[in-house]
Structure formats: C-alpha cells, structure tokens
Image (cartoon, rainbow, N blue to C red):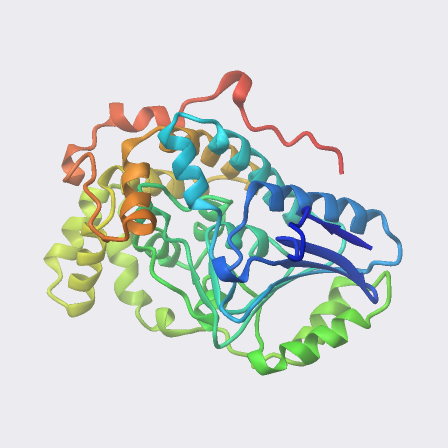
Length: 364
C-alpha cells in the first residue's frame, strides 16, 4: 500500500506512506529541503493516518525523514511568504489543516513513534513532539525559532513549551535556541535518546512487532536501545534562566537580563535584541495563557487566531525575507523597542475569528 503525493515523472513523491510489517511508515521525502512540509504533504499524512488507523494489520505508526540532515526543518515558509505578499490565503488554509493534524496526532489511537534525528524545527515539531513515543539522538537539533521570523512558536508549541520545567520553555520559546537530544528530554519534547547508529536496528524491531501491540510494549522496545539520558546542558543553567524568564512582561525580562552582568545573561540579551519586539510580546502572552490551559486544542485555537494576524503583518514578511529570501540576517522590524509595543497592537492577535474559528470537528 502506498499513499503519497503525486510525483513528477522519474521523481519520488514528497510524502511516502506505506506498510512495512505491522508498521505504518510515514516518510517525509524532501531531503534537499530538510523535508520542509507543504500543504499537500500535510493532507497526505492525514490520508495515510486514515488508512493506517482503520487497517487492523497495522499496530503502530513510524514517522521518519529522508536523507541524513534531519526529520524536518519546518513548514514551507517561502510559500507562506509569497502568499502573504499578495494577501493570499495559504496561511489560513495551511495552518488550519496543520493544527488539526497536530491535535489528531496527539490523540491517535495507535502507538505513534517519531524518529527526531538531526534537525527538527517548527512544523516538524508539530508532527513529532505530540506523538506518544518520541525518539531523539546525539544528532538532534530541535528548535522553535519562529520569533526570529516575527512569528511565535506554533503547531502546539505554546502547549509544549509551557509544560517544560520552570522557565525552560519560556527561554526556548523567546530565544529560539536549539535543544540537543537530552535537552529535548528535559524540556519534555521527547522521551528517549537512542544513538543514531542504532536507529536502523530499532526500526527493524518496531516494524516486526505484531498488530495490536500496546504502547507499553513499544516503549519497552525503544527503551532497550536508549541511553537513559534525561537532561542536557540547559538543565545546568536553569537556576539562572528561571529568575530572568519568570516575568510576565517582556520589559521585565529584558530588565532582569540587563541587571545581570553574567556572560550568559548578556548573550541571551543579545539574542532577544535580534527578535521582533511585537513577536516576543505576543509569544510571551501565548505562553502564559497556555500555562493556564487545559488542552492542546485550546492552545491551537489561540495560536490560529494569532497566526492569521501574523500572516498579514509586515514583521512576518520582513522576518522571512531576512532569514530565508535575502538571507542577510538583518531584519528591520516595524518597531524597534519592546516599550513601543502597546496593548492595542497586541489585542488583534487574541481576537476571536467568528466563522473562521479553528474547530476540531473531523470525526476520527
């Protein structure tokens, strides 16, 4: 069985889905783009899950990325940029379908295993970190760098980050800094570190499990290959991070860092100074609201509202231009200082959408 995007003559499709043994394999297959996900790929993943869920011969799902650079570098940012430039509707369509898929993965009825080897960013986090069994390696480089694009950590990122220990999630969400494998375990984005040279053997074991396998059995197989690591470098600096990022206003976080003369505080401050002031204020508010939320879906609804406002903003286009299009790494944000961001500017990001509201109504 193969469920895939239509490929051009002589080319493999961007999304390969097939059964191997008792496993439904979903392979992101754009290695030259580090498997960046397009709208059609999201749709094909959803179709594959339909088939895999209803097939009694399939006991588990395995998500993997083609090539050796990573699972997924995120969504197709260039396509979103081009649509935003002409006031198109790709953001409205893509994010709606992507976020609904993220929620589906979190509640999927069969064990869902994600191999988070290499680069895992943005939309790649949404496809993997909501799964039941999340495997990282010594090569994992996981990040949610969206604030650097005038955006915020989406795909349920606010839900995940708000459940990291202390203010670790606030730190990663606002700075966009990268987690290694053990960091991802500590931040609760992953479950087990498996050496990359053992992924092939682990994959073979998973594929050869029986249909109807339980999550407990899948976990036992993964754990038999795992190193047992549970914390990385970020855990060692949490005592410094927590007081800085405990504030509920960006101005207070900046002030706390400015008062601290340590090298870590000053390097963190330099990183924040590169980000969109409005993006950081919106991201922090989303993270604080997520902390009080009771479900992933609640956070995704809030993220969707904010995402549509971001899509229409100059900061999003400027952030993508600087990072992806021109690659000059020198964004010129619409506001230069945190103090210039007013409540009136932020309010539209949190307004209900009426008929356009995100609804999780697909019966699965």
